[in-house]
Image 1 (cartoon, rainbow, N blue to C red):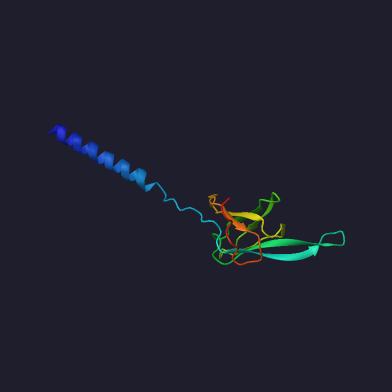
Image 2 (tube, rainbow, N blue to C red):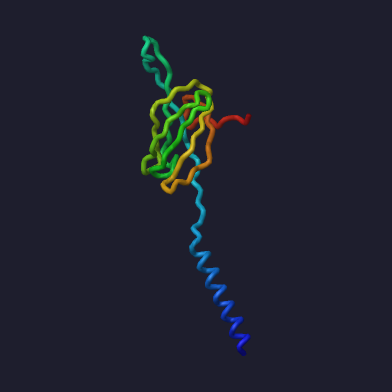
Length: 135
């Protein structure tokens, strides 16, 4: 009789322990890469009497997680900008240098520090911009 009680007690303790561990495990919800992102070009003074082209990354509502940091990095110039998405997920970056056809890496970081995968887009006046071809 004692052996049966011991077995049942061990089973009950094991089930409670398993339930406690499982209930503390938050589900993993990855941050998606910014979607529906495009670029717009503008001519500005280069400070020497000439003009140069600068670019702005634009994401429509839902393009990024709400209030996420959005990273825009030009692989050709090794430079980029960081901007904050609005509560609806839309964003508009500061201007950055580039040439049409440059490969631009875009990613987002949510409130909890979770990083999204990186998307590669071709720099051109388009909404949304096309994805980079495979190398």
